[in-house]
Length: 304
Image (cartoon, helix red, strand yellow):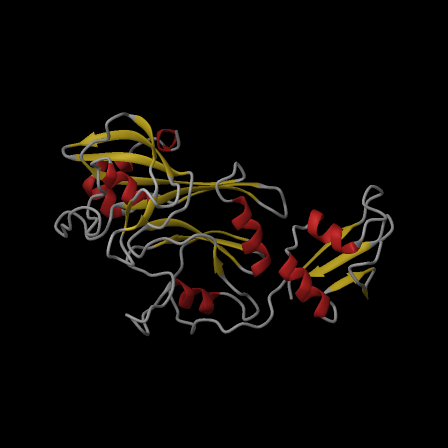
């Protein structure tokens, strides 16, 4: 089982073990409760310890952060495109047309959960850090255990973790750079489709126009909140629906068979190592076909 350890410093000495685990490792209340029940969940100098213990400077603290056995999706082989991997985090380049989870509408369908069940060892418990729609391509982060999922979720929409997208829109935004701050909720009469509604949740999208080609605009999108279908709803609300967006724009398989949205970049300060990760997924072929300049745009322009 995945284990983390640290040596108690002089400043940490005298504090309870429970408080150190929460302040130094970011252990959640629910994980701390599970650790207390495990035989070797919390150890001090190799011996089982209680959260009320007060370690001394130089003592070694070890904690089992792995998950209890869970039922995983049936394993199915699929060649994953992995951008980054360590003992706690996996970042992949998601293909178009692949769902994250199984649904009752498509039982037995190959999903990313199935592919990760095949790829990861049996003791891993993959959790998507954020979800991408079936048609969306690009960077997608997964935590390999509940502990890392909790740590990464806490970083979302902070300076320690951010995502940016590339989108092809029909029409052009009113300004080259702008912010859309409109609340999003369920569309009237629907339990799936979203819309800008007065009683919706606060939502904030930043956009930057990168170029035009005919009726298409290439935009970089930065979500400052994480509402369902936020980018698609917000761009449609300013008269620039995503090309191919059958739900919020116009379905046109002859143009593109999916909403033209690509998760391009993830920046992350690793919660354990403190390393800065900067991960990108190259634009997919269907977007390049519609906007050939994408293949030659300098990376610094895409990341402005």
